Length: 339
Image (cartoon, rainbow, N blue to C red):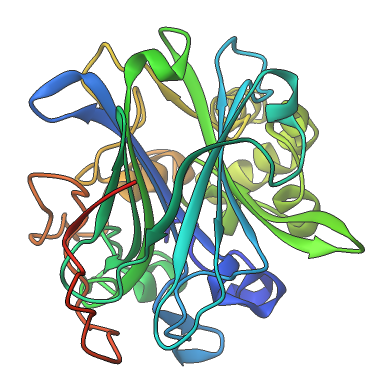
């Protein structure tokens, strides 16, 4: 699977589905290569352990959702987009998007320059998004674009082509920004969620590349709470797992493990996106890519393909399978809101 269920025993971090980071995508805007689309997905609509549906409340108001951007290749953030959400009241929630530049982007906090304020969170099929200058912002329930035979992955990689996520939803945070807002020509991206802790914050989830945090990581708490700049400490464990699963020779296992760390997504907006070489689109078969690495080419696919409900325009992720609107929207509500 992707980064879904990265908590203990295929559960959620801190037992809270709203904090569970699932996938990160980055690709040039279709029809306008001067802009980029960044998508951070969290909160699966259904759990594995325990099984069954999760809460309808999309985002945790006490938490912080953050997209980190490294512009100089040192795996330390130079730009951060931070999202906080209001309390979930009467079936509704709003979001505030902030941006931080410079050394403070690598720190922990919910400050920064407000880009979008009080943006409505989408609970139903209609995508409610917000424009603010050259930025577009969306947050809310969507169809989960990730595709994977989860049961086959759990059954010793015996795949049958049963897509666990075909009818599942996820909560998306989607940004459209000009490429100039990303700084350097090529950047490195990762996402994280943070929870309050003794008056401050504690990182409970982070990642960029799919599947490896769920399948290769042994020191789970250390990994999920860590920073990409320190990921070299996990190299030996990754290499050992690759030796065991893929039958790699030790030297080759170490080399391949080095291609998976640090856990960041490299993205050059001037080139077409294609995982794992550059960014990640919503149709890239990232799980197949990982399985080929994990098994040293012995298994090449899980027989599952992209979903057919993706949109051709912002926010690109398809409408949710289940509407979670609990009351009729106010008469002034519109699909597009001006910040």
